Image (tube, rainbow, N blue to C red; front, side, top):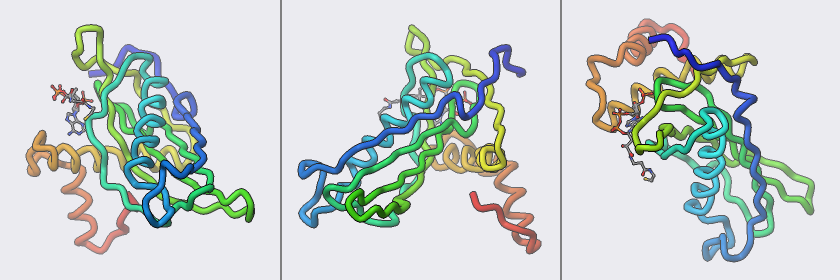
Length: 184
Ligand SMILES: CC(C)(COP(=O)(O)OP(=O)(O)OC[C@H]1O[C@@H](n2cnc3c(N)ncnc32)[C@H](O)[C@@H]1OP(=O)(O)O)[C@@H](O)C(=O)NCCC(=O)NCCS
């Protein structure tokens, strides 16, 4: 069903969060704890989805997160979150994490992830969210891939039968014919 809500762009939901890694954030190796980073990512992503839909949200799921590089005590963490696709009551948020050694003037990529949030009405029920209109090439790429990621997470969450996942099936059929395999 077509939404009657005014569309928003990914830029409208952009949230950039900056944190300094303090001793209480680290493990015994002096690196940022993964759980603390996921907590910051959850907050940044929740704020982005709230900016998109203008109402409270709950985290419905978090896709797999891999940590590419350890983040040292005293480094700065930049978390960028933007809605990458809106569905009916749920939104996928893309999160990109960069770290910075401010003394050595060195910036490096730490990880990326996708979180899914559901907008909630005053009765605690899921409510429709505005559609998303991607603008840049990167936003369009994330938007296209979101359907496949949604089907995969709904299958893993027991909310969709694999045989109903048309986008995923099309992806595997095209890759088995040696056609190009999308990044996400
Ligand atoms: C997320 C939640 C609101 C979904 O409620 P529900 O009764 O399953 O509602 P529905 O089946 O109507 O699904 C609502 C939306 O959630 C999405 N959803 C449900 N489970 C999902 C999952 N595992 N992953 C991604 N999206 C999911 C559905 O696809 C649907 O999206 P759509 O309307 O855009 O198509 C409900 O499970 C909940 O409140 N969970 C607890 C959330 C929470 O406390 N999070 C914080 C800490 S864990």
